[in-house]
Length: 446
Image (cartoon, rainbow, N blue to C red; front, side, top):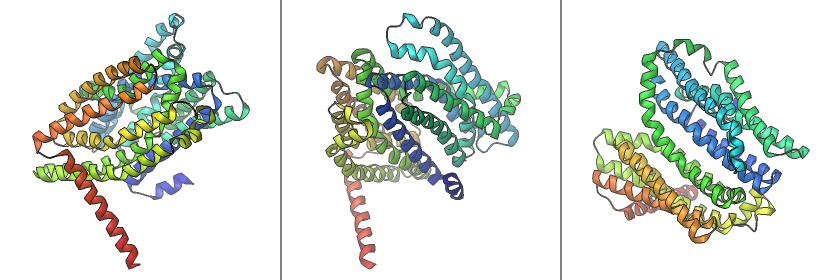
């Protein structure tokens, strides 16, 4: 019923936003169940396993996703088939390499003392094989702007996983090993579904060409660096905490930062709608309008986030109790959440400074910025744990990469057109007041 309703809504922006929102809700539901079904240490091991799994998968997704859309969108049917076939070849090659690496890694896994790492070494190869068809299908439907089909793929993979988790929670059979079986089943079932429906376009494998493979490869080798570096932030913190403080600390830290998804959903949505407006101003040669548009989006979102962050700080204990359960109420999770929600007020600056740098054709600054942020993040996290001896050190260190991003982004945009950071908040405040006045006037007229 839900999918039929979404298919009637032809607005791709709505479908994209709905997809992000629904997946976030499903992810939160899954987390609520897992945190109650598994012991604290097992949750930490699962978070570590999933973080490393998604990080390594960046070699495949970072190589193909952007490159696929670039070469596929707007092409002729023959060229599209060529791109799909070539993407299957590259994706299959990367997956095969990862699976081959998994063989010796599995054989020597007993030499690793950390149980979280052993778990990853035992399972990562087969999971990448099982998820390959639905990954290619996701690239295809995204390039065709079929966000209804993309939502269906994501919903199915997450839905099957959650269904098995619920069954295990009800039957009291939840264990870390069974959770991994459920995750693998979700990936395998979704891949089979995309092959049967034809969304994965498996028959197009025969249309691959070395020329197209080379084109995708040379484009992807640059995009994978930025994607990998960006994904390393969260994963590096997880790895540092896991090896220095243990899996239980990973579980508490992950729970504390989980509600940051509330911030990410509107940021992704406004970034998607703001980029065309920024691009239009830049293509028209109006530098002042580019900066003013950036100020308007950044300032307004910051003003909108302010009350949400205040509420989150005040009611952090309640949120942690709802998501994680009573066993996490007296842990550090609530204070971790308060710290992250406070830093979140800087996220609109970070996101829209980076977006505007891409629009004005300065992606090199963004790439160098990400590398500096990564070094700053890892160094600050190690120092934080050394000083405090607990996860508060990592949480406080989280502000360091954000400050680096804002500083470098501000420097890069000031070279393009000078402006003051305080003017961003002034414009946002004026926009917010204007919207509120308009709203009250409409209510008064009614």
